[in-house]
Length: 455
Image (cartoon, rainbow, N blue to C red; front, side, top):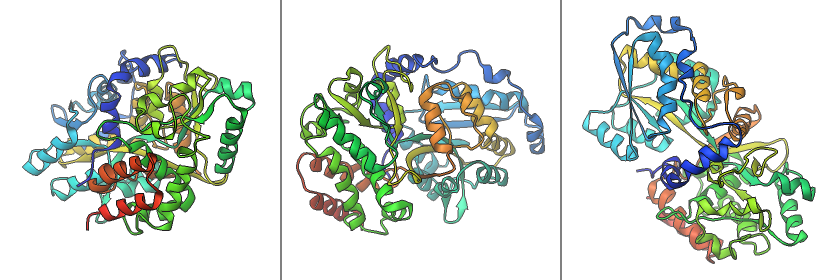
C-alpha cells in the first residue's frame, strides 16, 4: 500500500492559493492561466499516424484523473487535435478522490480506459489488480525516443512496460529575490559548497537569516523535510544508493541516510540560518509550507527557500515571478558543478483496455506533438519529453523546469517517499522528521523510521 502522492496532497493544500497565485503571480510573467481560445484545436497535426488503427469515428475513450476544474481544461483542449483527426470522443473525468476511486474501480472490474496516475507506487498497485494492460509497442518506442530511461523504469513492473510519462515537476529548486542578489552582489551557487558559503555570507551580513522554512501541512505535516532529505540523499550518495534506499535495499538508519539527514540539519537546525521572519528552528514545525517562503519578497527577513516549482502559485498578487523579477528560483546544486541530480515527480498514462481507439490515444499522448500542444494551453505544467519546445511554455518557471529536465547531464530521480510503503512515506517519515526538527536527534529519527518499515 502506497501513500497519497505529493501532487495530490499539494493540490488540496494549495486549493486556497491557486486562484490567487497561479493566475496573478504567473500573469505577471506574461501568462494568464489556461488558454480559452482552443488554439490547440486549430493546429494541424499529421492525422496519418492514426490510420493504422482503422476507422475510429464514433468511438469513445474514457480518461480518469485527479486533475479537476479549472486545471482540467488544458488537458481536454490538448486532446482536441486527436479527436478532430480520428472522430474519437475523449470523455474526461477528474476527481479529488482519484487515488482511492481508481483502485476501487480496478478491483471491481470497471476501470476507465486510461488513468493519469501520479506516482509509480500507485501504478504498481493498479498493475497488481490484473486489470491494467501493457503499453503498445508504439508507445514503448516513443518513450525510448523521447524520455530518459529512468522514466521507463518507473512504469515497468516485473519486466513489463505499462505507461508513458505525462507531466513532470522539479523539486530541486531554491527560491530567492533577484533584486536582493543584485543589490548585495550575491551569486547563484553552482555547488553545494558554494550554497553553504552563500548561506554563511548572508548570515554574516546581518539583518536577516539566510533561510526560511515551514513544514506544517495538516495531517501531512513533515513532508517538506522528506523532499529536503531526498535531495541530499541523491547529492551526497549518488543515484544508485538513492535507488537502493527507496527500495529498502539499504537500511534507513544506515550511514548514507544518516549523512543525508545531517546534511539537511546543517541548514534547517542551524540557528544562524533559520527561520528568517518566522521564529527559531522549532517554528519550522508550526509554519505552514504555504507561508514559509513569503518573507523572501519583503527582502528584510530571509533570502532563500527550498521548494518545488509549484510554489510560484503562492506569492501575493502583483509579484513578478521571473529571473529579473521580485522572486525566482535556481537549481539546488550538486556536490560539483558537473553533476546534475534532480529530484522530481510526474504522472503516467496507464491503460485498462487495448481497443484500437485506446491504443491510438495512448500513442498520441506519448508523442512530442501532444507534449507541445499541452504546453501551449497550460500554465504551471511541463514535461520531461525531450521533444518539447521550451518556447511553447508560457512562463519563466516552466521554462526553467524544462531546461533542468531536458539537460543531457540531468540525472532524474522520482520522489522517494511517494515510492515507499505508506507506513513510511506518508507516516513515519513525516512524523519522525517533524520530531527531529523540534529537537529529536538524528540517530533516534532514522532508527525509528527503519523500525517502522513493514516486515
